[in-house]
Image 1 (cartoon, rainbow, N blue to C red):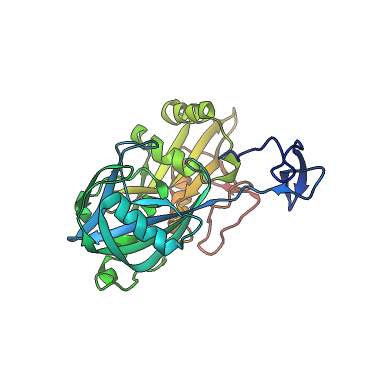
Image 2: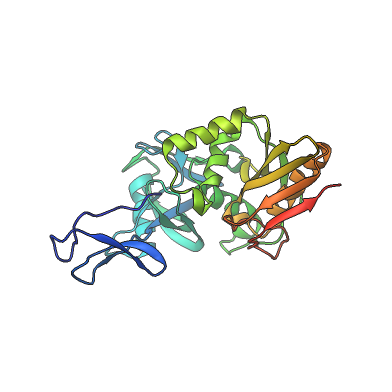
Length: 326
């Protein structure tokens, strides 16, 4: 997500800002005074309200994702704590007075929209009020676990997935679940379909090198995803309701006169599921497919992508790995 730029120094009031390196990054700075323009993520709260055996969702009345269901959420005001913001946003958007039962997770969305942020999720339950849509919501209702729709925001999807994992321990209000390795009954690997384009693009946004891409460039990504036969995409899907894509890997096939090679350049796993064997399973699926195509080598470009986990306890591999297949 592109950083907001200023024209004049807000400290001097009239000096045009220039650019210089500060803290390892190129930043806007004032040539006359000491002002440096830092662009930091904004803090946001999300609330998972447990009610009548399900979760309260709101239908958004405004863009982005107008008319889609999400968890209640909103920005933290400068004069309130995160807990106060969560209680306020819950009442404004759902009409419910709630008490917070736990700080459930802290996530981030450097990809937007509309800007980079830190998402703080709380679990809560009602203690008063009446369920009704308010603020920027057009509808509010309780969804049973088996009725939950696929939420448009990545961080909201991860929170729902975390809640579902913790259900046995969460019934009494105590934190449950863990970040233990996942096993095949909990997720599956399958070839991607055209319908997966939106979620795969959302995962690509997690890769820092791609965050400055334009709308036109992302459109080209979707076209290549759907139309180029030499690229095979595999997705990891959590086996829950609704199923969510938790990771993907893209295998490009290059054939010369004497040999064929596979290249993995793009791969991402949702933060909640990293270091839990998902990346390893995706790479194994790509390797098996490359072997079935009788390719000679599989090259893995990990230089710009810290999300590869070739082994469960190694999250940062920064060299080009070339794996012989025959």
